[in-house]
Length: 164
Image: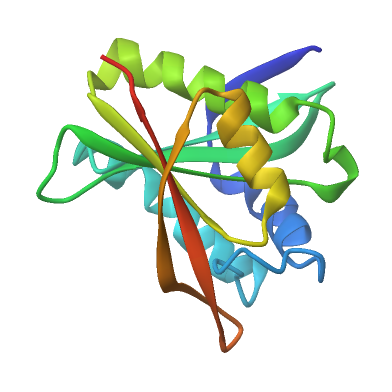
């Protein structure tokens, strides 16, 4: 598998909007209303990096941007990061998102020195659960009605991993 990880760019907006606009993204709450909204979100990435609050990356597979992956440092718990990711549905089930999470962990270990990582996912999101398990995360709990997506509340599993 030939993948490359790089920081997200404003020029990724069209691609991310295309991916996130799919009706099959039923467990992802961040759905931009327009390409301009996505550009505005991506324009904040340099500031988030400077503040050391969030680090977002694109995964390029065979020269195509197919995955977004990132870590947000938990405010008040600077030793803990929350990982999030999404992948173009045409590339589901190929191990690319798992590779993306592992590559992000390499960055986290070398640059951020976090102690703990967490992944939250809707209880029904079996694919995300498989990614977490393949990457060595353990299920630690169930959070009732934690995620709101298009006016529907979802219970979420919390998966965690100690990395230092």
